[in-house]
Length: 345
Image (cartoon, rainbow, N blue to C red; front, side, top):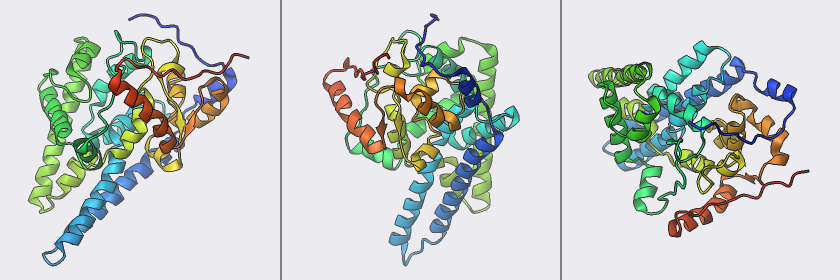
């Protein structure tokens, strides 16, 4: 892998050192409430299901579906968002807690955090460099219109569920030739026949398969089969918000550049999406200084924003900027949006 001389904004070293400090308390304030939301919304969905009767099946079924969508809106942030930051090992000062929560979030979302960790290191080392970063390959482009797309984001995508389950079952048997969260070709290249990495992926995949199978058996034998929908597949519902939050990260931006300001996008947003998204809307900052915990990214943004492109506020404003870029990419796949950088003082 080539040695890229990344541009990083100037920041006071003492301030940066303070921003890099980890805090178990700050991490608990993120992880525990998000899991409590999962528990509450899952419980509400189950209560709604129990209230479905022959006399009021239509109204109660609609209520149950609505509760499931709320449940999934939160749970869809578990795999690839909560686990992403935990893979950086920056939220908790205690590695024991970091490991505990990454396994909880990954289990509930069928997420292979072991393979993701290997891939993500390379993504940060060579962000959007075509020959080295197989995690984000630009131009990404998005199939963002059509009934099937809308259905898959508001409700669920059966093809995606099948792909993840298929990957997990095959990985549990030591076969990495199936696409999962990443393309199989990239994952194999990232682990590079490293026995330790392969062993980790196999072990975790077996935990996922056996763990969810045991839970399914318990749910069915106790007459609570609907918990399979809520727990086993809860993170696969209603991914619309995580898509709105996550797509702006790199879409339409440059590849093969040593400047994170040109290949990553930062925007600001309200408390709820920022909370669910673990502050990854500060994506330039995250790539420039990946050792800074997510809860300190707003302060980091304030410290270096004079050196960043103009920042949109809110998902609506961000997507108003993003949609014309996506439309340009539909007609010209090689189109690249180049944000205006601040003038040097």
